[in-house]
View (cartoon, rainbow, N blue to C red):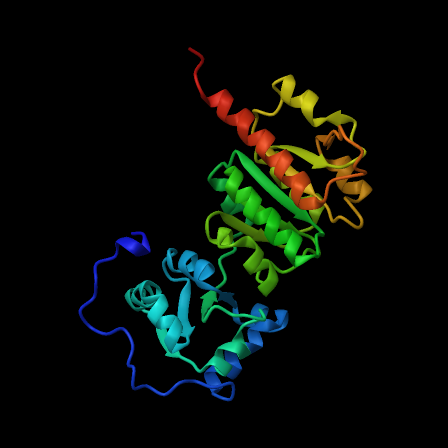
Length: 290
């Protein structure tokens, strides 16, 4: 049930007289450790900051364990407090300083959720037979990774795979850049990029590697009706691109045509063009002709 449609609770979801947690409160100290990857890996938990990310996390049963919020934020976002209470999460009022200790932005929006990690094994993600998949191979910039994740969600992808030594998808900047999309699709992490490509092909997906030096032109593929198949797009980092081994393992290497004078597209733009081209072709293939 969407948060705005929840029935109004008659009982209070938090005690206004309860003490506010400060940066020195043990619960804040423990949660703050999740800014470090080793602590996220050890606990299987992470922090989601801001009302958008928190709302999307609350929409998935069992994800949010605790909601930290300032008194002002609890007033502004009463729907989040109600949803957290309904989900059985602990609601912990904090001081502005306590919230700042948990947040990673310069101007935090007053709410941070302590969440269980949501990634699934690749085999489980393939069990739903997704028609569109994005693979982030060795992409280490959290902002870029989160942007591609958000774009994949918007294009209707069923899964996003963080392969090899890619950034941790639970990195705070990546979580914020995904704008809640990490809770909408199957998130997979780990695994050698070559093994990932092999597994995707075995699952019936055609694997296309996005590269500025590809022998296939994206527009030509679209015009020829070649993008309507179940497809996994593999993207590499802006700095280094995809390794020769990954390029060789893919079914094809595809370049986005540049019709102007720009030298190249950044990762987010290239991913958007590729994913939306496939999404459109797949929709057209599924729509019966009149």
